[in-house]
Image (cartoon, rainbow, N blue to C red; front, side, top):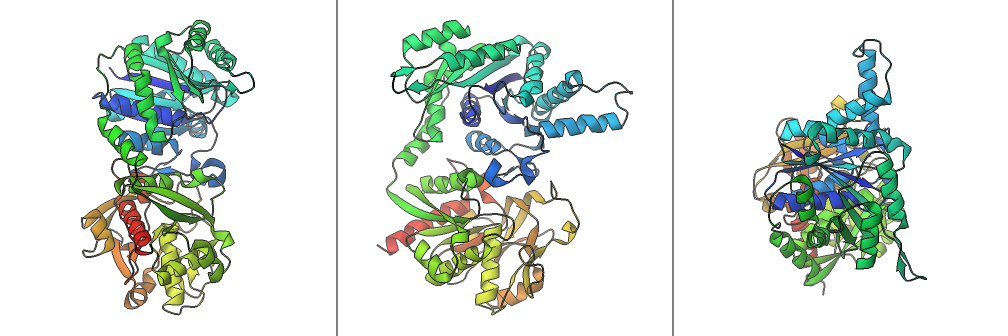
Length: 536
């Protein structure tokens, strides 16, 4: 029978439940179990797709086109498992489903209530992955912090599930903070005690408590916590600050998380084999050089807005034994070509990731011009690919004012335009989303990266390369290296006579892994290393 792990958080938010859930998924997978992670968020948005990246962070996209919380990126990268629409549920989606059912008469005129109607829908969605994947273990992270009003229906749902699947098939893990008071030179257990007490008042006794801390937890503190929280001392797992998120699974396994989970669920398995992961961490910790990558974007105020891009750059660095020094550049500060050159001159390579709206676009176009003319490696993702085309149309073809109709609806040269089937659509969930095929031309940089004429990558956009200008740009030298065969949409472009200037309409960061970097990120960082060595 499928086993269920539920991870809750206490004391404060931002303790790293997502990394903990991903790490446990990796450890269990290395034990030979099939594992699926999922995230349940208490906010009322239907999904994060229309939320401001500066407030919420990036929107992660699955193969089947779900716009999800960024923690799903951690799940996929750690467990190397492709997740789906059912892997992320919000309170908004739950309430919408229940209210639509009421409108359709599914409740026969009965009163619709949080309990049982909302909690039943939450449970149905929590158990959906079991039917879809037949996984040995389903790991469910509950967003928010115990004590939040909006989390209560989700906590009640996971309380009820234990009695439906059996106590032996259900494990509750509570992640809390154990703060260190510098002036007293003492770790404080009271916040954890109160958090566990509140969880128990809601009917849930945690099997395992994970203790986030900046200082090692001594035996006396551990004993106090075990007594007051009524937990086996062996099931108190120290979650000490790590040098990088990649070290977290190794630390947690050393602390005994795999053994504790197996004991709680009655799983008879030996220690997890994390040797391959440890080798990757060793490469990460022992680079032979450092390259400086300028990330030019419009959401740089919150680095989590580009989380998967940053992680993928690091993955590319691991494969090239290079440490990545990211220079966060707001495209709005690049007001002219001279400013751009001065700001970017120390970068070994430049990346322009995705984004929406007209703010900061001229700075991105200036960035593409600088990289094209100065032979600096450039990687354009989604909007960054469109920027290549706009800059090339303006400064090589002489199409003055060339632009995207997203930025300038009245541009004389709309080299980027709204997809025909996007006219009049509402914002949420209507982008071109999910995995699509791309046919790659041999002899191109993209082909060199993938080694294949057929690739599949994930998309999230509404505007496309305008095929009306395809011949003009190709005749002027722009290389169209990848096309979607189903709809003849341009997917990748390259600049000729350039060390490495590539743009992709898709988002390759969503499929990159720590021990298997996305091919374009691997080659981009390789080009950055070569550029650095060339300029020594």
